[in-house]
Image (cartoon, rainbow, N blue to C red; front, side, top):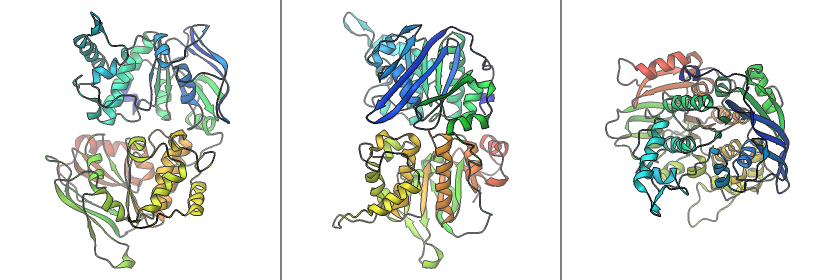
Length: 523
């Protein structure tokens, strides 16, 4: 997909520019944990340098040291041939290093302009020059093709728009080194295209771009050089052209990864878990009607921003629809009539429907709490205010072990886990709760290839045990590899229903771009 987005951009080449950044035997510990152990490699001017590896490999820690957030315990970082001595992100920026972190750093109560120039506001006669700041903010947004008012509070923006503002912040800085940490994880295809063009311009102007990503297609399409880290150690640095997809995955995980997607069961008629009838998420959107069946993983596919998020959030009780209703069907052996679910998240959860949001850090996890506390919350699903809260410690420990959550122990704070392990904790909460229907946005956003395979296994085992999964994903290959059925959504309408095993990227994109003669397809 990136090939079409990167049309006109220079192809990756072997770096020939001068050395800009050099890591020399860099080491970093957090308590007893070795985050980095003797990492050494160099980055060159006029190149895009991928830094990749599994979650927890040390990629972000290394880049945060370059960005002035952390200091090495041993070794040194050289900038332009001289040892770099910075003790803060502000000093790193002054030294010519700009960073676009995966974690949002915008303050929601400030405007876009105020966030872009926070701490370095233009001044006139000793006062902040608001007009100049807004003018320069407009130029920064235009540079990344973002058509938003610079006076909008950042708290009013979507996650994707906030990430584009973060990118604009890095782009407008006068820097010779730019760090992108999973920049495409939360933005749509059009924003990706604009980012690709921006990176091509930055590369052509002689900048060194460090590009952290788990998306292998981005590495092969954009990056001249690739560095692989594993468990805090340097594994390989060399031209990306010397790698294949298989060899890169093997370097990242330390083993051959076979089939990343679990085997899809044979198609069969199964009972409904949820019936969605005439659901209109917002005024002006068409009605959506379909069934989610037991034993299946159903994907809401299509281009981003076409209404998938509104549909799944209405079903989960997070958003009030303007019309229609959602009914939950009990398993056949109970012989209970369908139960209409109100637009209330608490009632939906009590009815056995779990929801995992795309932004697990702000909407899902309690970051200061431990792994066991976050997962244990699921066991309290049916507890009332007058009931004594009980958590089955042995079951919780067994679940953490079965999910292969990588941590010191179950008391480790969730905030310190990698993205993949945080996502496992979110899934584990619902597995512990006893729900049998799971709604999930972006199941593997910001997750490495090894953790992806484990998350896919958990979702497939949940469905095989009689559960039902409805998901959205910005990765079409994830829809095709993981799901049993796909509903293609265009402008809020379901325009096609496809068996995933028989679908192709071309077929899905045809419906996503051109739709169908019918306004809606009953599924």
